[in-house]
Amino acid sequence: MQCPSCNYTNTRVLESRSTEAGQSIRRRRECLRCRYRFTTYERIEFVPIVVNKKDGTKESFDRSKVLRGMVRACEKTGISPQKLESIVDEIEAQLQQQPKQELSSTEIGELVLRYLRQISEVAYIRFASVYGEFTGIEDFVATLQDLQTEVENDENKEDWAFCLPGTNVAEDGSSIITTS
Ligand SMILES: [Zn+2]
Image 1 (cartoon, helix red, strand yellow):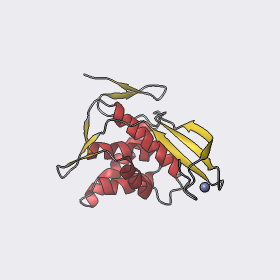
Image 2 (cartoon, protein in one colour):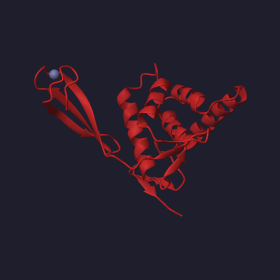
Image 3 (cartoon, protein in one colour):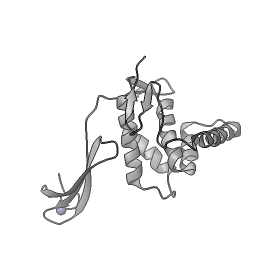
Image 4 (spheres, rainbow, N blue to C red):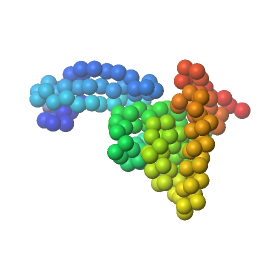
């Protein structure tokens, strides 16, 4: 791994740990020449997930694009980039585990929204306003009402529990795939 500061190629690993979903490993490294410290992520390379866009075109799932959208939605909310990175890990793991190989951009947007709703209502509304492409104030109000209803429904439920079709979340937080 090349040092981002001086380009030297020898670094030592100070710390390694799995991210929440166990799908990637975060490594804290130190350059052996200039002592610059930086972080790398190691991830399993998966079969690409195909996303069907609203305009009828297809593209492969791009985690950095999702992360950018989330970072924008979370501006000035105090939510750390590490938190968002770990949410994207969760989302990607979830997408890899669900049985369909193609998903609509709307399904992915809704998945992101379910996570954002747990951490920030402001981020939720911002993301929904971009992803949901509100056509007018009525849509916006309807989304706010959905949020209100979902928050009320969720008050006694486990956080992070969300379901794509055919997917359930077990008590330990792992996903169970049920195929029909
Ligand atoms: Zn260096």
